[in-house]
Every structure is written in C-alpha cells, then in structure tokens.
Amino acid sequence: MSSITRRAFVQAGAAGAAAQTPAASRPNVLFIMLDQWRFDCLGANGNGIIRTPNLDSLASRSANFTQACVQAPVCVPSRLSFFTGRYPHSHKNRVNYTPYRQREPMIQSLLKGSGYSTGSVGKLHFNPPTAEHARSTGFERVLLDDGIRRTDQYSDYVKWRNGADPNASVHYQRTADDIPAGRNPFRAVIGKEFTPTAWTGRETRGVLQTLASDERPFFLFSSYFKPHSPHTIPEPYDALYDETEIPLPKSVGLDYIQRLPLPVQKMILRGTPRYNMDRQRLLWMYRSYFGDMTWLDEEVGATLRELERSGQAENTIIIVTTDHGDQMLEHGLFGKNVFFEDSVRIPLLVSWPERIRPGVYSELVESVDVVPSVLEMCGLPVPDHVQGRSFGPLIAGDRSLYQPRTAQFSENIMPEVITNGDEGYFFTPGKGVGGVRHPDAKMIRTHRWKMNYYVGHGGELYDLEEDPGEWTNLYDDPAYQGIVRDLKGRLLDWLITADENDQIAREWLI
Image 1 (cartoon, rainbow, N blue to C red):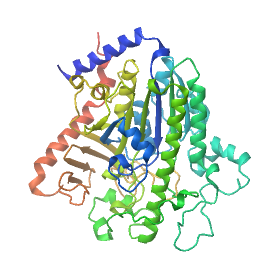
Image 2: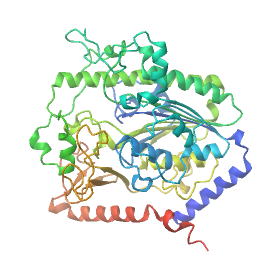
Image 3: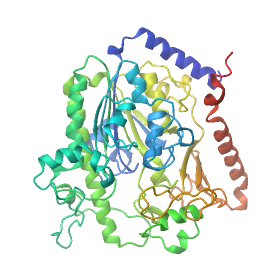
Image 4: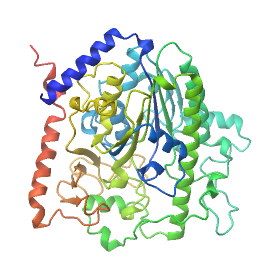
C-alpha cells in the first residue's frame, strides 16, 4: 500500500468516525508545554540526578518518544508548527514576534469548529500578544503571560500580581541582593505564590475545572515560561540542589568556535559571548534549572490530579512537551537557535488510558506530527494543508497503518533576527543578517546522521552513533562526501514535496 493510499485510508476512517460519533463522546485534549526544556532533564529519559516523579509516572503510562524533533529551534516558529502541523517555510513564521498571516486554521480552531470548548493559559507567544488575537485563532478562554517585559502590558498574570502581591513593584525576574557566599545567586525576591509558574498552574487548574464541567469535550493548552532563562528561582526551590554536583558541559575556547560554520559562530558570539563563563556560576544555573524542573513537575502533577478529580482523566489525551531545548553552554552557547541535539531534540509524552500502548518509542517523529495525531485520535479528518504524519496508529498498536519516517527536518534563520534591535541583527535584503548573506539554514537528521546546511558557508555532518556529542564535523572529509550528497538530495526532495498539497491537491482534482 502506498503512503498516499495509507493516509487516505486512515483519514477516511477518521472522517467516518467523526460523522458517527457525537462531539460529547470524543476525547478531551490537555496539551502542556514547558518552555526550553532539555530532553535529558527528565528522570524517565535517563537523568539520575533530577527529581521529576510526576512526569516520570506520566511517562510510564505514556508513549515516550525518545527521538522527537522540533521544526525550528526557536519559540514562535516552533510553536506555530505545533499548532498548524506545518513547517516554518510553509507557515511563514520564521523568527520571533512575527504575526501569523496564513489562511490555514490552527488546531484550536479546528477542534472548536468540531464542537470542542477551548482554552489557553500562560505563554502563547503569538503576535500581536493580546487575548483578542488569541481568541481569533480559536481559543475561547484566554489567560496570557509570555514572561517578558515587552509583553507585560498584555499579561493577565501581571494584572493579577499588581492587585495580589504587596511587593508588586519588584519585577518578577529580579534576584535578591542579600544572597550569602556559597548560596544560589539566582534566588528570587518575590515569593513562590506570586510567580508566573505558580500563577500558570493555579489558572490552568481553574480553567480545567470550568472546561471539564462543560458538556462539550475540551482542548486546553497550558504553557509555562520556565525552565526558560533567566534562571531566577524562588525559595525553597533555589536550594533543592545546593549540595548536588551536576556534570557540566565540556569547556570550549574561541579556537573551537571559529572552526564552526560562520552562521553558528555568529550565534555563539553575538552580544556578550559567555562561552568562557565562570564554571561555578554555570553550576548554579544548572542547579536552578533542575530546581525549576522539580517545581514544574509538582505543578504538572497537581494539574493531573485535578484532571482525575474532574472524572475526565480516562477520556483525555495528555501531551507534555516543549517548544525546543536549551544549550546550557553546550558548544559554548546558551539558549537555542542552533541544530545541536540539545536544541532540536525534545521530550514528548503522549498518554490516553486504554487507547495507546505505553512504552519507549524510538521512531523519528516531528512536532508537525502532533496536529494530525490529535485530530485522528479525536475521530476528526486531517485537512490537506497539514504536513505532519499521524503517529496515532503507531501508539495504538497498529503499525501496519504507520509509515515510519527515515529522516527529520528542521530550519532556522541563523544568526537569529533580533526584532527588538538590542543587538542590531536585522535582515537586510541583499545583505542578509550579521554578515551572513543567506541566513536560512536547514537540517536533516536520520537515526545515525545529522547534516546542517548553510548556503555559502558549508555545513556540518555528525555521526550521532559514534559522536553523540557532535564534536567531530565530517562535512568536508573526503571519506564522507557520498553521505553528504545523499543527505543534500533528501533535503532538496523534502523542500520540493513539503508543500505538494498546497500546490496541487485540490486545484487539480477535476
């Protein structure tokens, strides 16, 4: 059976189910997103130091994808791929703080149109960053907080804190001034109960109570700003890992960075480079990151318990993931925006009691696969514009209806366009960004190989089996030119075929 026929078969079955199944009996969807969460910062994924008991428990009853990949290692493009099931070059949101202008509906709109009640709490990162705009995309109930100063005027969290916190004049990301030597320098001034994390958790559970009491099935998106930097963290979480020695990334020098392709160099060296930062301060950053993850684990656990209390747990699809990872000084860089594993490989947990088979899944999946998977599991047809591939049959135990991917793709503007002007990295037609004439970078990743391609600036080729840390670039090695040519060909094929449905699917059906 060809892949087209197989997909048509699956969609036909979903469409039939949608026609026969009343909306009220369809499953709910609880989609929880943590921002900038590393794949390896989860106990269930092999981290023996971090404490994440609730997420580990969820992983034990979920499909735990260990080879999931985002379509862009930066917030807005990645989130739009999660919501649309489309690649960044197709949905056109290539950098942060850009509006979504495409005609294709997002998943919340598709579900709302099929009888779902919809809600969003926390970080959406849409532009414009207003509740009105979020409602126009299909969310009925909206409580916003993007976690950055430039959007605080639109933040429901900030409005709440201004009335609730006696110290509201102190910014929520400010660190304390009275921290003794040998203690966490990132301890927050404000108390835990007044933080964005605590607010997002409380409001998520409040909206969940409201949606669960509705006769309609619900789609709830709960999105936390943490563990994203800055690493400000309140008591008692600031001290959870005080005595813990956490393995730190390999130190790199300028000589290593300058051997990387120019776009990657620009990312690492932009602004104030920190590749040679103090190792003790770096250790405190990791301790804070781990503390944030333990705290987020508690918040997610409380939300899952609220779902149980609502009586809706058995009929709710739960998705827990992130928009990208965090380098945390791996290869000399903080943040993301590069194709190293710490940025593009993500945790992805999918649970639905009695409907999916829990276990560890090593298949290559992409963030664009979430939309078609959710729609099919909800018994709804997958629109033509969706470019992802449903993993529903795979985790339901019917592998005959699932065609495994042989490669994953990601793309990004490198160096990143800085739209607020702080570092002067703008795109100029004919000149590019920061000295890079063609900043649109592409990645192809298989189970063994990863190739990153930068037009005019060469590339990177890593053997993920022999070199999982991605330290030995084989791109220019004569012995590997056959692999480079093959991966370039597959990258070209993907670029040509990704938009095939947009170009000819309906217009040519006569």
